[in-house]
Image (cartoon, rainbow, N blue to C red):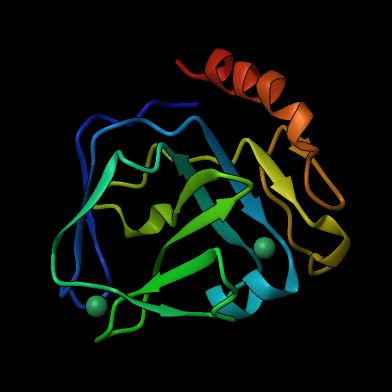
Length: 153
Ligand SMILES: [Zn+2]
Ligand SMILES: [Zn+2]
């Protein structure tokens, strides 16, 4: 698996909203859940998990979409409605899940884990090293992050 060059920049489909990321992801994932299938209009969503303060919107702005569940903000471009990133507040922790295909260069991206395979389309496969029918338990994350770091070249 490749490491991205920093900083990374990206934009929505129409270019109204631009982002800049100054830290590499600590985990990458594909999610097969039916919610991600709808939001991504595809077989699964892609996520690069990044420190929440390592990304800024440098041009344009975002609006909240999806189910608008408190603590789970799905950010979309207000013009083209690309699903750009999700900010999650959970138990006092903040998470930033970037959709890596927003990046100007997403060629480095590869999902290390895949989640919610219980809902996957029958033909949908990914190169993920670890598959979960649901989501990994939070207690598994330190070992997964160490495995992700070790897999990068
Ligand atoms: Zn846009
Ligand atoms: Zn999902």
